Length: 368
Ligand SMILES: Cc1ncc(COP(=O)(O)O)c(C=O)c1O
Image (cartoon, rainbow, N blue to C red; front, side, top):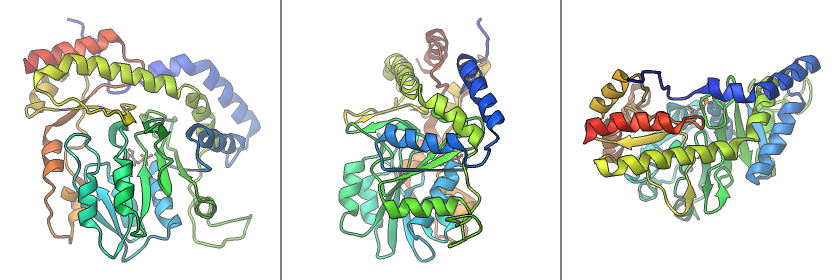
């Protein structure tokens, strides 16, 4: 039996292939000593604006901060409601609480696992100020339906692109549809750095100016402070690393897509629900997520064969104590069913066909 471990993400192999470029960039950055808001930070912002085709990119310290700063830049605060899926990482809704607003959790679509636009329509009240659409696992949310539902209601669209860098919706990049979009460069993200990092993007000039103030102590120039801001700047070293990885992102996303196809072709006839794809969008497979009622059996078999797997997410946020305390219990059946049956397989560009076939063989043995 081949028992070499297969991790969920293999950052080591990718680093080896980029090592020379990264070492060179690190040496230059260290020699330059412009560690805060140095040239790589501004260059990365320009390169990401160009890649996405969006007017403004304003970097910050993490994806969580990107969401927080986005809501502050849109003046969302106490008394406001923000509609968001429950089936997402906690940061999406934490940001809503940070600004004192109320997260209104709605259900997902059983096919895409993204926010269900019909549910948004039902959740809109006079207090609704924004919808945060999460492009979960790398697949774009249903942008056109969401936009047509919120149109005329004076509701902002915020995109949580933490898992979707480079994915398309109708031939346009995710992150270019919202009033603000928010990216995470956490190391395991499909565009990840070697620490924490984040980015906000916006087509609006005044929102971009506010985002720049917010990430740097509300300060338009040294020792002048016009609003209360934060220390949320992207690190120069991380920016230098991201500029190298950005050059490879299309190739990485393409490789993830090929890996996902290999998985799906082998597994789709076995009673598992494989990830949905649509002709409208290009999935970048930040995660490759399946659903099966006996997932625990499959996970145990994978583990016995030295293969990692993970559950994103075992509970909806509407079931998490941090968000339910003091709130009436709500039921979101699709989220609950999905969190009880989903599991994700190893996914990264460097995953080899042999590794995928080994994973498929274990799944087949359990599912057949
Ligand atoms: C959907 C989603 N939103 C937000 C975040 C927060 O990003 P970060 O970890 O960079 O703060 C993540 C990261 O895990 C995420 O997956």
